[in-house]
Image (spheres, rainbow, N blue to C red):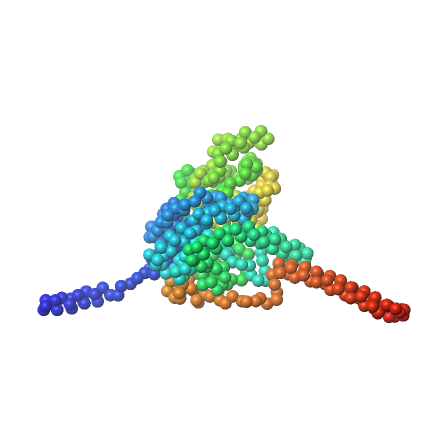
Amino acid sequence: MKFSWYLLPLYAALVLAQGPVATEPKIFFLGTMGGISHTAWVIEILDLVRTRGYNVSYVSYQANQKYIKNYPEVGFIPLQDPNTSVHFNDFFDLEQAYSKKVVAALTSYFKDTFADQLSEFIHLMNTEKPDVMMCDHTAIACMDAAHHLNITVVLTSTVKVRDEPPDQFSDVTTLDSDIVSHSYVTRLIASYRYIRERLRILLGIWPLDIELKRIRRQVKVEKLRYVAPNSGAVKLVNQMFPLENPYPLNANEHYIGPIFISRPQPLSDKLATFLDSHKKVVYVAFGQMYTPTQHEFNALVQALLTNYRHGIIDGFIWATVGLPTSMLDIFQSNRTINSLGFANNPDFLFEQWVPQYSVLNHTSTKLFISHAGTASTHEAVFNGVPILAHPFSSDQPANAMQLEKAGVALVNDRKTCTAESISRKIKTIMKDRYSEFVTKANELRGLAYIASRRKSLAADILEQLALYSRHGKAWFYQQDEPTYYLFIPSWYKLCLAYIAIKVGSLGVRTFRKQISEMAYRTWTQGRDLTYGESKKLQ
């Protein structure tokens, strides 16, 4: 008994020496779809938050673990591979976004995976108990699961994910001009085109929305209305306004980019030798998901060959991810094309894998022919390299227009472009007679480097959310959603109002005419009118 009394103070001393048990707040990022543009910049933020004493992890499929290869301190939590026959490439239509084919693929994918993902994510969050759940904007099940468990949600995106402001909308076809100088008819046509496209998309995704509602009812999970400013979710957008059409932000929206990738892949010996031995190189790449048609490929290579023969460029590097090898053979076998000097030319390099940032960072790279995807755009801007944009779909046309508006790019129309038109644009940028492209590219690079410091702001926001959210909501970023808007409606409402006024005024005139005729007949029945009375009635 006495011996146990002697042990008690010793045990108490050991406990006091250890101090209180500290728990690190957990911040997880879950992303299952999309490439490096969806992932790399978020990992950069997680790595910074980790240095502040937080437990951070990347949650995804095993195949995506490659994105944290250079970040060994960031944890990785694997997910089960989706049980579906739909592939990520099926979500892209090069001709039309949200086409029937794309919507059918999305509907089939979510029908196969959404319920299983909700179950898996809820189990994961119940087990790991993260304080903040960062969800890629395509990870709808992640947002719904976190909302169901009252975990703070942060939506990550490279484009704005919101409804248009009540008093404006963005028309891609007029981004390169002064909308104020347009006539009322032009603005009315733009309004009609805008509302027609919105209706097309809404009607297109209607079957998908119905399917998601059915699954949510089945598993008893409520949808997170992440677009609404009062949803309690916070949105981090890896973008800056010179590359995005400016618009007023809600309290829960933060533009925190473009975030500079601090650990880029180095050049291979082959690429380093090639770039060191050339002075005027064009780099060509269209991302992982987009492949030019044979016609586009022929036109692009012809244009590059023409400029090579005239000494305007001295070589090019083409990243061939997704490019069929048959395209090269078809190009060389086409007798209507002058491919002299193309075959086995050491100045033309086709590579399956290219460390894009490092190629653009080399002083010999003078032009980037790109699809104008967000990640590619940011890497070109960070290195001050002008762009010849060749956009396909998604956010690329708008990105291309913004780059052209900033004076750092020219744009190809992939449906109408020819070898001659592409060749002229390559020559214009490479010659750069008045140094306009280089000067403006350097200005944009300076803006991007300053904006990239907002990575610290993103880390600050995550800290606030991890420490001070209430019941899974960022109450300090919430704003009440207005139940009505003051009268300056958006363009499409103006369009409808204009039509309503015209129809209404026509109806009033018709009604007045009918009343006048009835009154005239009643008044004149059985009597003769004077000339003055007739004019008054008319």
